[in-house]
Picture 1 (cartoon, rainbow over the protein chains, first blue to last red):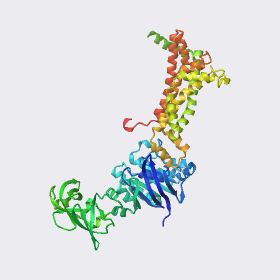
Picture 2 (cartoon, rainbow over the protein chains, first blue to last red):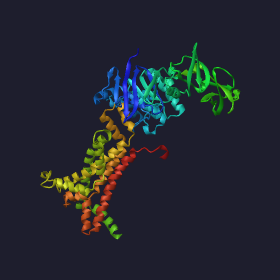
Picture 3 (cartoon, rainbow over the protein chains, first blue to last red):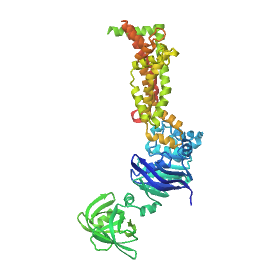
Amino acid sequence: MAATEISIRNLQVQYGHIKAVHIAALDLLSQEILAIVGPNGAGKSTLLRVMGLLEKPAEGTVIFQGQPATYDPRSLLLLHRRMAMVFQEPLLLKMTVAENIAIGLKFRRLTPQATQIKHWLDRFGIAHLHNRPARLLSGGEARRASLARAFILNPEILLLDEPFSALDAPTQNGLMVDLKTILAETRTTTVFVTHNLNEARMLADRMAVMMAGQMVQVDHPDEVFSHPATVEAARFLGMENCLLGHVLEKNNGQITIKIARQKIILKGTPPHNKQIYVCIRPENIRVAKKRTLTSTLSGRVNTCVKLGQMVRVVVDCGIPVVAQMPKEMFDQADLHAGDEVSVLFLSQATHLI
Amino acid sequence: MDLIWQGIYKAFYLLITGDPEVLHITQLSLCVSGSATLIALLLGIPAGVVLALSQFPGRNILISVINTGMGLPPVVVGLLVTVMLWRNSLLGFFELLYTPVAMVLAQVIIAFPIVAGLTIAALQALNPNLKLQLVGLGASRFQMALCLIREARLTLLAAVMAGFGGVISEVGAVLMVGGNIKGQTRVLTTATVLETRMGNFDVAIALSVLLLLLTFIVNFVLTRIQQREHVAWPLLK
């Protein structure tokens, strides 16, 4: 089992009377890339600052490589110098790019070597900007410079707060690929905060889902995406349909569920409680002209909205059900607002909470 | 109008001919206000940094006191320093009253809150995450403070200009603690008051022109430094 770099126990961060973060336990394993995801205001950045020992929690312990962190200035400085933090904004200083990249080494009273600076400028594709004042960089270039400034320190733990936010798509993708390559080579233990699920899926070894200051799930990204722990997490992770139902019967791996006065039979193992949520992504729902099947709900098409090559269909089945299908499939189904339709859930893509 | 032209003419005449008294007055003005500004910077910038970056009980009260001090009437400062330096009072045994040292002391009290207040404002105007970023890159508190001062240097130069401008132009405090003694504590502002009282308007205007010229030169140099630092947006060049 991999060693633990940072452990958090019974953490509580409060702003006045508001509990911003409340986490019982979280472990950051050596050489892993942990993505902390969650909606805005979930407490992700606060958690990252606490992990980076930049903010003292109201309660709880941050354990750094087996030793509980103390917050006296001397110990903090030594611990800060073993980590590197990159914020959402590049926060470059009013100096040249090269001087910015060398600043962390200067703080450590190390002499920055020109080759070292050049190496990291090269790795992030900004070698040509070496002497440019940092204030004249574009958003993507500045982000690359801020990452190079952290990597040159060869940190034991790298903390990244929304490293790709506010960048255009090509810049974001390019930077993500470069960062993934560099992280694979350096094997730096990394925590990064994001609300972008694609970033988390592409980069992370494990994903931690935060909702309203609480950690609701920590697992492999595939597991998190297919089996979210709570309804709120399911909605955040793209399972737009979280339909409240009651288990009527369980038989040979089949469950009969009552949803909005209709019965539907699904495959799977339900949780123990009678009241459950049937969670499914819109793209895993098929809508067709009315048929009588046990695994379908009946309803009436409410709206059909074209979104590029996809069509989003909202069906009123007593409760709204959102489906999304390719345009060709939609044309073949010949659906219009007001049509009586059957809504089929792909059983293997259904998650019961 | 003639009087003003006469005054301007007189100013250039005094400058060109190198009138020893005027030169001494100008030199003393520059020395007193320059030293006061320098001392105020040495005290005000660290005080401003500490107040801007720390949290401790009474901090807000101290900041309020400094902000109030930014508008401190020079005559009140003059009165305070006079009382402090009066022969039988607390610091009377130094016998500093009616000396340039007393004038510097009074001007430091005037300039200190201006420098400290503008330093606080300059540092608080920086991105609040910059402080955390520097700590996150391993900066000690001292290294962080130096970096932040460096980042706020354009605004801090404005603090230097405001501090110098505040003291070179004040008359109340230096008049009270210096006594406007010819050849000893007479500076451009007090000399202007005296000449006006005596009805020598041309000399008073000449001294005012010199005072303005002096202030302009110092501010011009500081502005040059400030604007050289300022990087214009490429599109607006």
